[in-house]
Amino acid sequence: MFSILIADEDRSVCQTLYELLIASDISVLRINAAHNVRDALGMVRNHRIDLLISEVRSDGLDGTELIRKSKKIQPWIQSIVVSANQSFQSVRMAMRSGATDYLTKPVNGDLFVESVRNVMLKAQCQSAQREEWMDQAARLPSQGPCFSVLHIKMVPPSDVASDILENDRELRRTAFRLTHLCLAGRRYIAFLSSHDVINIILQWDEGNNEEIGHQIIQMKAIGRRLSEQIRTASGVGCTVGISQVLRGIECIGLLYQQAKKAAIGRSAGMDSSVYYYGDWVEDSGSPRSDEEPGYAGLNRIVEEAKAYIQQNYHQKGLTLQSVARKNHVSPNYLSYLFKKYTGFNFWEYVTQLRMEESRKLILHTDLLRYEIAERVGYESPEHFSKIFKKKFGISPSMLKNKERPLRGAEPFDRLTR
Image 1 (tube, rainbow, N blue to C red):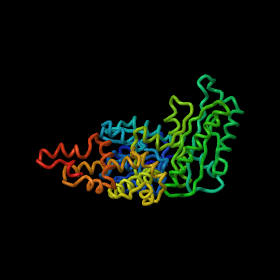
Image 2 (image 1 turned 90 degrees about the horizontal axis):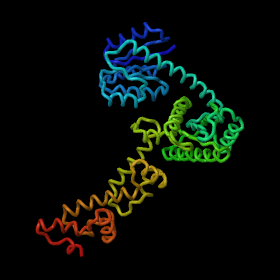
Image 3 (image 1 turned 60 degrees about the vertical axis):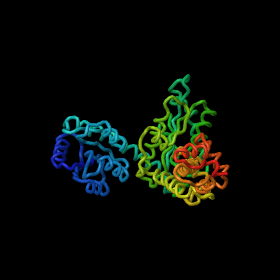
Image 4 (image 1 turned 120 degrees about the vertical axis):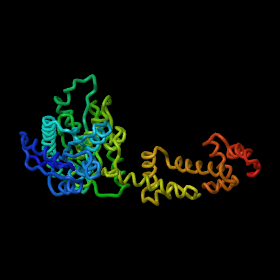
């Protein structure tokens, strides 16, 4: 028996969908309706909802945002978007928010009922899966407070029969024994969920943003080590999917889906690989929402570091260590995050800011070279000129002289001697 919430500003639409559901053969426990986002979120917070049927816009707020917020409250909630908007962009945003299906208005009754039936079947399967994972999590020696999942799919070489893993019990035992050896000293549960898949639930203490980043690095190292050891011992490759680190045992099922999606999404054409869910989302083109657990803190570290650099790049004492100290993270970790999220290393970014500002000062002021060098954070005018020429392919004096004759001014190189 399923609980359904219909969220649409148009009461007649809610009534029509309600009547279609009542007349169908779908086993429904309760059908609620909400005509604005506030009421819809209130129902999601206070009642179990298996399926959310949302208009693409509701109460001036994008219905896809309602889906995202609802999934934060109840990660296993299923959703269908109903909209008069048939644009590709609208469909794409709905699917990225987590919608299972997208129907256009006016709604075709048969298609609507069939869509709900398919979604409820998926929910039923996931519910059974969630109970299995919760049973496994209950075996952990203590409860969290934070968890992550590694999904390890063993992949036989292309020249070996595909059913080798199903028939070779000793091979599976070897892989499972190596898993326990790799995880020695950690709080975890490992279990075979099929003949070719090992799942691991890891426990973590609650930590700050830097510690979460270190946990991700540790999980990647575990995945690489385990993949290499299984390959060496048995000749079988592995694809390892890694979830985020989230707080609360109720997130176990969601973490499993993340790890599985990372492994499946990146395994095509490869027989040994390790992938983190966050990297999979980024490379697949899905936007990273600040509301998505695990990303907001890491993005905030980089944004705050960039803001601090932009305000202080002219300071001669600016260093990676000083910026890291300001953001309460280690220099190595800040360097890793900065490169990952901006594409620049720390000094490339600082130099870019300094060079752009110095170029403006050369073209639009009468400051001397040593004054410009000091203003943008360089102690030596010679070093400043060297960096400038490397960046722009022209020295500061040559750039100034190209502009000075137009104003009848004295050559810049004479002013900088």
